[in-house]
Amino acid sequence: MDMTRREYHTRDGLTLVADVGGPVDAATIMLLHGGGQTRHSWSGAMRRMMGEGYHVINFDARGHGDSDWADSGDYSLKARGADLQTVIGDRRPVALVGASMGGMTSFYAAGMGQAPQATALILVDIVLRPAAAGVQKIQAFMMAHDRGFADIEEALAAVVGYNPERKGRRDPSGLMKNLRLRADGRLYWHWDPRMMAARPSAEPPAWTEDLLAASSHIHIPTLLVRGGKSDIVDDEGVAELVRLVPQTEVHCVPEAGHMVAGDRNDAFNDGVLDFLHRIRFGQA
Image 1 (cartoon, rainbow, N blue to C red):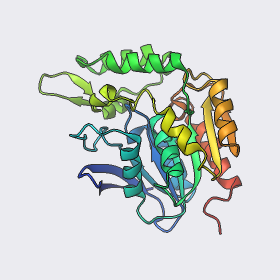
Image 2: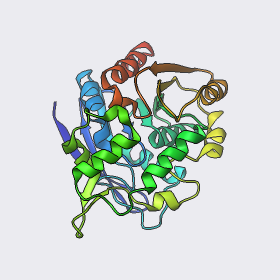
Image 3: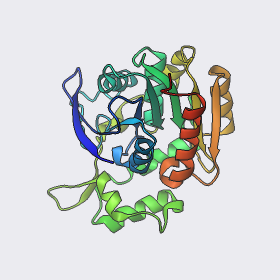
Image 4: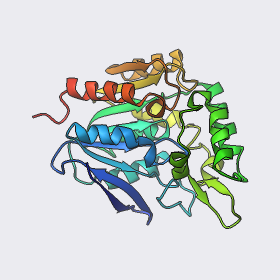
């Protein structure tokens, strides 16, 4: 299954980089990664979805991976939603699959009319009001390594320290896709640190008021894929989402944490594809 690297140009002059694959005339799945990640976090899911016959677009968000950083420092939901609108173009129907920051972007865009082609919404371990303890943990991790790492093993140790479930299962070569070597010889996470300075911040997610405003406009089939060991999504957050968006289904992956697709990729893919099949996504 071949994937093609493609570039998209936003209204405010940024270049977004994506991997695109699958039949061009098929229903489209948009993959939106979480804050601090890159499109490579979806590699396994993308291959599986392409194998199921979907057209898949998997792009690096502004400020991440191979996409441009915003000189203006604009990492708002409105800007991210506009980016999503640019990447979707005139494709339809579209299923939005977003993890954490990407899930919030998808939710906002669907609710605020920036993705009118969307006929399905899949939120990956994110709710409108994330649990405070988990948010603080993410924030501490993302702000702790501003001086970079001496080598890949040091970076891997930091990841395992944040998520011990990854011990013994993380491929250092895969981790390099989230790092860049700078002139000082050290490795740095490849995302714009100005995201953390913005208020509300992109990651940890802090867009609750915007999402609450969008929630009354979400009428398409919606799935929440929840990590059973997540410290970001709690029962209260799930209850609020289901109350505000009552068509929401909840699929729990018991052995996964916040990084559901990375922790238990097969179980994640099974849950998402079963949902898309049941709602007859892309079927006439």
